[in-house]
Image 1 (tube, rainbow, N blue to C red):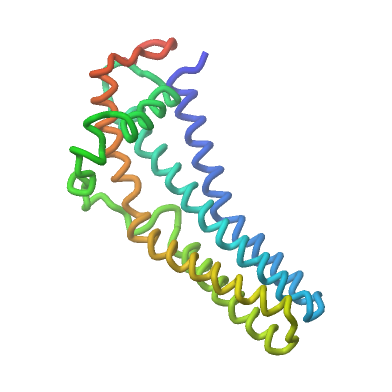
Image 2 (cartoon, rainbow, N blue to C red; image 1 turned 60 degrees about the vertical axis):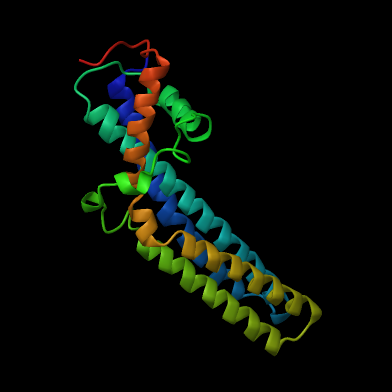
Length: 220
């Protein structure tokens, strides 16, 4: 039977996995790019550059998603597993269900009556989360390098395929630019504190809704 200590260990392991994904995937993309682009003929380089640009955009979205998930877990651990001295332990999956319900269904949810930003403890916001800034700027540098590479390849080995790939890469880089502005390091850094605010409201919502304790028992 799952208890609080098991849940704590499981969630901590999930955080470590998220950190590994965040760091390892950009390095794999770099290795792939260097290894492949240095061995291909010029006529195929535009296509590979398009593949790399697509991977970079996808991995940026993946990284942000992992960090948002990690922030949600960290805030839950701080408030539910480390911060509360009494009260019923409901469990991660049940709490996460209420988390989603509060954000989407509750009439007093965040989008209506709760100003999350004004409730954030700004003094507790860290300078960075999971060393996100280096990963953030690495993605920007790699995308810029791919754009320059594709334009250079098109100029040297002019072909319809390379031109089309270059156009697609420019479009992808524009989308990436908008997303990078949306998820700046300053925004990501506040994720944990923002999730602490959300969880506090979720726990209040759970009490009003009569959430049942987990089968493992009560906190004490």
